[in-house]
Length: 402
Image (cartoon, rainbow, N blue to C red):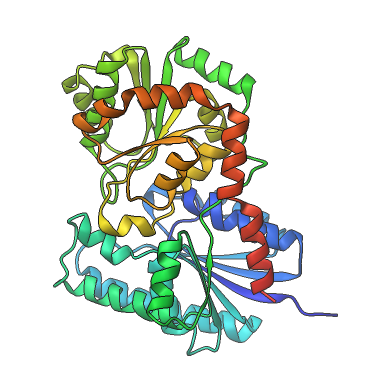
């Protein structure tokens, strides 16, 4: 009997992080359905995604039905962070070594560049092929957003490890043609695939009944609903998002704004007040559960991509755009973000701004109104399926893990 292909899935995110749940977990479950695999999953658990001991046991048992064996680790924060991270890497190496010896793992499947930067340290040493999904220059993102300096030790370490991962990985799936060209120009030895992030089309689809239900719960009538479900700050806009909404409201008072985030709600509400948006024209709430997201996107009329257009953002592939389009929802994005700007303009499924500012939105308010009315949900979804097809990623992974 043929032995299962043994794959170490290495994620520098928490198990309940929507990025993992929506992307990697979906992909490896599809692999499990269609082949013989053993997955050993390492995650780094953060307090905001913490599970109780009983919940963790339940999840572990559920995952085993898919051939997934979960090894959660603690995400390090606080003082002496570099020392803690170094110890974390060393401890992780011994965990990976035990998994390699016991289960003869042949692949490391790393999600995003921080995971890839750690995986490049142990994968060649343990003779495991390294497959990276969502290769994006995280160190450059941090510098461009003003969080790090190029002279800092953490930037230099991560940047160098990202370069090694990009050059010496075996397979790289990256979201844009821009990164494909960059990696090839830099002489990568990897097989590189252009693979924009994609979500399950059976889950993310328009639902008319849910649209009516959510809009009734929000009590918004026929108003245009603008939605942003995601983080603020860090690698995303902050107050600029509310400034954008203020400019939209000034031009179109028949608008309602929904933000679902873990950012401080009182601060966001104060920004709404400064933008002269009445309290009955917006709602700020906690993150929307994964299972409810399609319903809220079905209820909306325009999605927002709150990513500032710094130079390296052209290498990014926001998951939100996949979710929006598969639910038939057009979007607002800054020019220079991923290939989402080109798709928005060429396929007329979105509006591109130079930045989130009053001047930028004033020039495009008519475009926003036209895009909301122009295409049907079915047309937007078809464009989304062609651009952000999960089936293509499933095929790439199946052909890779052999």
